Image 1 (cartoon, rainbow, N blue to C red):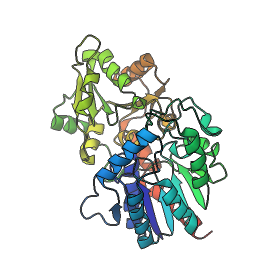
Image 2 (cartoon, one colour; image 1 turned 60 degrees about the vertical axis):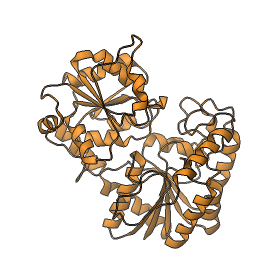
Image 3 (cartoon, one colour; image 1 turned 120 degrees about the horizontal axis):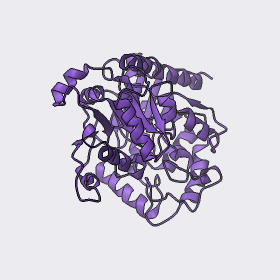
Image 4 (cartoon, rainbow, N blue to C red; image 1 turned 30 degrees about the vertical axis):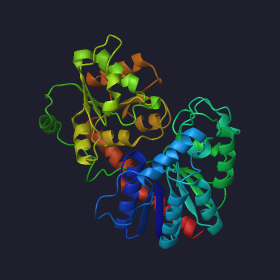
Length: 413
């Protein structure tokens, strides 16, 4: 089989790491695998079968046009021509689409090409963008079921600052996206159900849980050794969060920062992926900075991430909308339980004693759940048992086998 995946990034962030995992596993299985991506860091030297087809100025120009005119996915003509030339070169049996938003594609050009040539597609939804007028997450709005318009979240990513094009975009997406042979995949049962209620409802919509590398990367390290390595006390109570994208209110930064204030000197909060531009968030109404928060810049070092997951007592994910968070899987694979809000696929991930879900936006419940884990009173799985469950259910090999089955069904109907 010859498979070409398309995504915004490669091996950089949640969905991009899933793409990289599938690519590496397909190669290991003896398949021909390729990845085309539009932005972000270039794949590491020696990584075979990858192609970045956009330039930074092109992405920035597209983002500016999208935000001003409100039509994300209708620019990037030159970059998309490069992508189409790459597809012509590879001649894949199946195109595997992932996150297509991100200011790097021209949707009409791509889908007219796909539809005109009858290329079968697997499309993995990592959020809700494919079937809404514009937003990645619709929160409490259900206009996407009937046609969008008068969008309450048009300033959310991918933002439109001036014009509401959500009704027009919804119709154009429906026309472009619902042609040809496709299988829709989502990582969570929650998102699969949303997809079935959308204009993709006539297509097969199935769930394949995200997989991560539980053999070489995300597995429990010795907690004491990791704490010594990074300068933490053996008996310190440590709470870990991933701070990438904290300027987006959806990520719930205010809840995790308030948690640190509420815990005071009883625990320390570590935030990895911190952007210095967000330092003002750490200053309270009293003008004082929370002293128990340690911020660490973003890192591509997955071994370091695994060590931090392993040394923490609890991982927290305060997102107000989420699909099936890769960071949550990574933390649990390292033996660390999770506390999060009851949104999207998070309850699925934390079921069966893997973590605690509380009412979205309820600070008191969020604080109480974290305190119960820190005190050892939550009644959750032990570290090794938790890691074993994730190895069994969310390993890269298992995920890729399920995708390979779908590829074959599309190639040999």
